[in-house]
Amino acid sequence: MRPLAPADQLQDPFSRAADHDDDAPLAAVSDTRCFWDHLGATRAEEYAAEDILPGMPAPLVPPAPAPGLARLDDMPDTTTASLHDVLEAHDLALLDPPAPDPSGAMTSPVALAAGEGLDLPEAHLPPVAPFIAESPRRRGRRRRGTSRLGYRLQRIWLTPLYRMAIKLGTPIAIAALGLALYFSDDARRATVVDAVDAARAAFVERPEFMVTTLQLPEVSPELEAALKDKLDLSLPESSFRLDLDALRASLEELDWVRSADLRLMSEGVLSVTVTERVPAILWRSEEGLELLDAEGVRVAFATYRGARPDLPLIAGKGAETRVAEALDILDAAAPLGERLRGLVRMGERRWDVVLDRDQRIKLPERGTVAALERVIALDQAQDLLARDLVAADLRNPARPVLQISAGALDTLRAIRSQSME
Image (cartoon, rainbow, N blue to C red; front, side, top):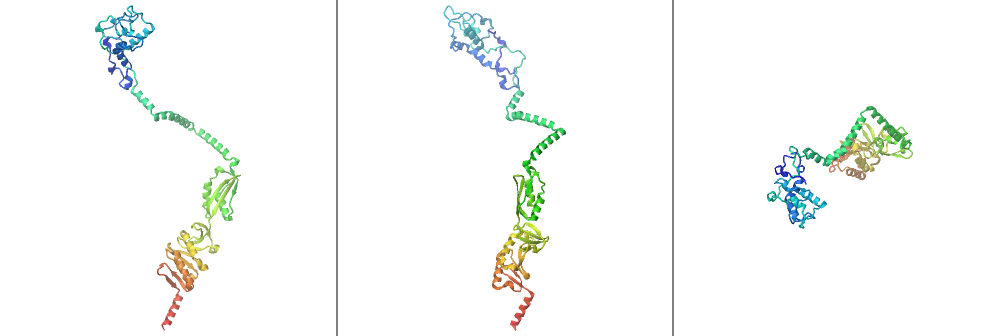
């Protein structure tokens, strides 16, 4: 059994503020022995009396001291046994049980450790023994524990973001640094670039990827020549080096092409399909004669009017933006036949229908087709346009005006004077 500390060296374990690190957390300064030692000092007798420890009954008579155990009267007056001593005595009793007393009672090591049955004055056994430290602490020795810095480092390591940054970010940073150091040399960079270009060229220029034939649609010779000139291909060429979208956009820049489609066919054939614009009207502008389609997009230039006598003629500023409206008026003027010469846009807001003999039908801004149909009905009923008429002004549909020529006006005056006589 180990010796017990004197009473003047006993310390309260719950008041050890000077023996621990002020920067350590509370868990670092806890003492696991304090509870058990205090419990052993205060409850040893009760454990023995209530037979809590198995196989160790309470003493019946005062036994003699067991061999190998020190008597408590050799200890200081203010000391007693701890639970550790009780358990140690219990283990010794199980290994080497003491000889039975002649009186028939068995000496309990718990009782011996607690001082029961010994020749010890009653004053030496206080009702509740104070806490007995296992061993006195050395003066000036600080208790080691987790510092505040270590505690914070542990908390940082438990953060998922920091842990991921260290596990993944560190290898990536090292790899990036290695690549940067490797490619910092110009010769190494040039070698890598040349190797990549050579590998790409060997793959791109394989025979199965080469385009050898250009297939064009059946178009006019002029348009075919324009298509070839726009494509500007030097065959054979790898299909990986052909930008089909750029080629299609270049073909659609031609006036004759409404839309184009390019496809790579088998056996190295590049098929081109185009949709031509159909001229619908002839527009006389300041730059000359232009062929326009139904959307008002220029198709081509015309050298003279007789080049396309089948197309109607329009003129005036802004007429190219009203091609659809002009076509509707021309359809309504179909009963005029060969007398129709064309349409003129006036002030970028209305139309004039031009007939032979310099006759004009001035149409309003709104209700253009209805006004023209009214004039055509009068002509069919009374031969209005066959008379010596210069213009039929319908700009105000509620008050139409007919303008006759100067000779017709003189004839009309002569007729009126004769009738008055």
